[in-house]
Image 1: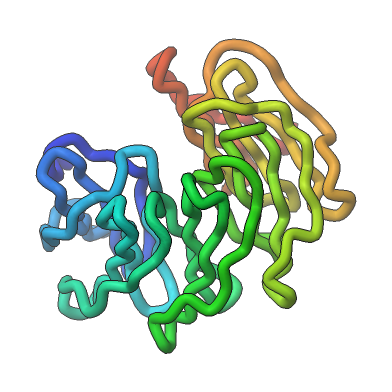
Image 2 (image 1 turned 90 degrees about the vertical axis):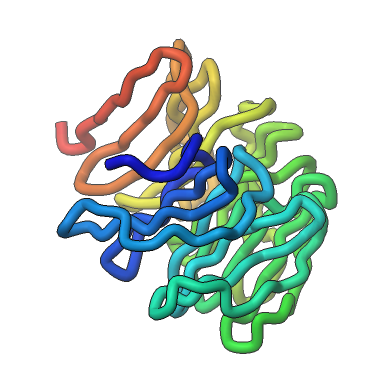
Length: 237
């Protein structure tokens, strides 16, 4: 399916569509999932190629400016309905637990946005250089690229209640929640497994690969930019 130039910053899924940020022309392509065609191209800006797009709470959420702008896109009109001021260097967004969550890499924090008022209601310190994040298992989980830790944010108190030592510092990587665990990938350590009940690292695999990660359909899905491969790890075996 041809989209815009240089797709980047992950994919979002929702509203019967896949939402594709494009760094080459600073747009988002909306791909209709049944017809497999682009039904809208939205000029937005992309804050950083190493980022993520959030979908949920009635909208699509994209960090569009490194100076700190989060765009709210209305899926009914395919237009930006509001621009929300967040902290500088906010590149990755995720939606869940009734809120929108955005990491600020240089300010070492996560912003919580109320989707009903389009306002930042909490700024949560999490550790050095947070980038990717995921929502699930009753919490928000963040990958700190500065020291390779994973802070767990409690959405009731807006505080970090645990910090898990994963040992994966450096650029890139990814984090996801599903199938009753939290997964982390990084270059040289393609898969690390965290138990959300004990907040402990319970397994880690070392070797080539590690770049992007999703969990679902009874499997772990790993993409390796360096090996140019996608791996499916069956959790039922």
